[in-house]
Image 1: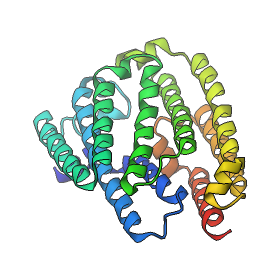
Image 2: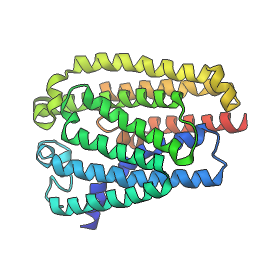
Image 3: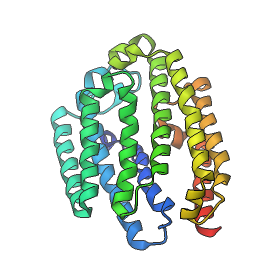
Image 4: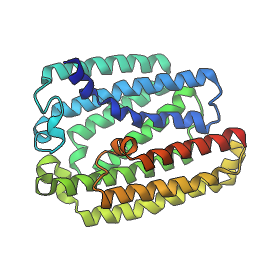
Length: 290
């Protein structure tokens, strides 16, 4: 039972909460111990809250999950965990998470509440509305970025928020395309919004967002304002990693039939994982040692 409850919490998805660390890294505060501790606490809180969201989502979606080739094996859909047990787990995770958020600071607490409300709306309503479903996913990543800044009390970077939003849109559209292609005729029974999508439409949307991600990141990397604030003019050396990462992800979506879970791609695709690590290492080197 404990193993099934851990599966229900989806700890592999906690990787998404790493976005909270962006504020710590790009505000040049990595060597400030108290801010590092606050960032780690913030990540822990969002891991609890995101697990609560995933559990609640599985409670609501148990019928449609049974129609999905992979999701049918989830603890609730497979009958290994009851809805009552999952409900108790959801309440506990939300309670502990919000208490921790309140203890951190009021801005972070408001951000945590916003994260829960957005995901509640997504689970009950927004996931069935074309376009808004993907925007809601992107906004949840954006809230995480805000949370990272509020946790350590640093200014929220408009550059970081813009890049986070566009990248999240890119990943969300890729996820929808994978669902549509994988489920084929069963797509409608799994998610209503898929009725209004087509591979061609999603390819067009991805074709709009992809260059937007690249251009926004390049503008950020070459910005004199950013160079003055960060004390370096060499952030542009990280651009090739972003280019390769996006192109590799597109390759996985179109040629390898992957992309249904960005987290699984990050963990399971070695070129993507190495690219992300190299980007992070290069960015830290430029920010702190050059």
